[in-house]
Length: 397
Image 1 (cartoon, one colour):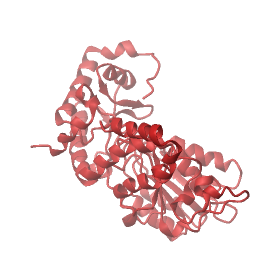
Image 2 (cartoon, helix red, strand yellow):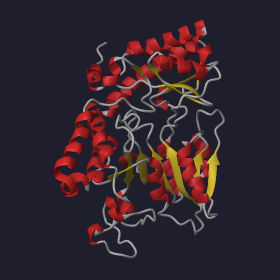
Image 3 (tube, one colour):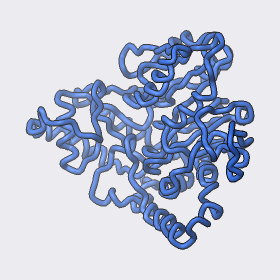
Image 4 (cartoon, helix red, strand yellow):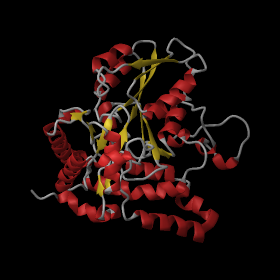
């Protein structure tokens, strides 16, 4: 079978010498990032301060429009930030938790950085965190999430795909339950956008946050925030800055007069170089289409699951493809040491405590590379090549 998506391999320099199975952590860099960063440098060098009026100032929105296409939002509905922690903090600052609605509901399998934001806010004594437990460390029962969301719930920040296991949550059901009781949902699509289809209109979700580091191949420093249109003119973030002002260049003292558009959810000056570098990845994802990427992802992750199970390894990801995102988590004895040996062989994966070895093909992955990873793990285990890594410090990847 001819894999049409492999024609994109030449756009990613690292693939020439590396088996790249870590797109769930950092997507491979597109070749055109070199050009985009040169464009930024040339703009700064030749236009100086005029660059703000000639494109830089609008970039949080114009670059956001590229993300909007990926998640089926409209132009002007997505704005760029440095990371998801900032996006979550801005949204959280829109609410005061002084009424009967004080609960923030999420599962124990959420990404810790997001938990830190909410736990820190709850220290003020007004917000109450409700953490929904998982029985297996892989999934969170949907019915348990629905039961935790009640009339006292204000916010439900949830991941579309869980970072430890790749489990796809039934976010449609969770959103419907939250809306039925008057709560808001903040959907984190960091581990889905670019490999699992996301449709903000179909979901009718209130807010979406995400980043570009992973499946979007956009690199660090390019988080994004979607705000549903009916919320934009009503909410007033306390985490704010001059870009959110209706007249930012009037430099008026005193309380902020919020912009009416998506700029209301900005704060200080944007991270302009990251907004340049992120565009190449977005353009490739948009040109291919997430549906095509998902089709290939299901096929290749299924090959990984079947190969691991045949070898008697534990798979800490859903076995059903419809419940699994773009990565497969394989757990075996000395998994962290095996990971270090794979990295030394230029086979890039990563390890997470309590989960295992996370392996993630993307649209640029060859089927042969799936088998290459499995064979390498076989050989490492058979020869005990991992032993030299036992007791050594964890690899930060």
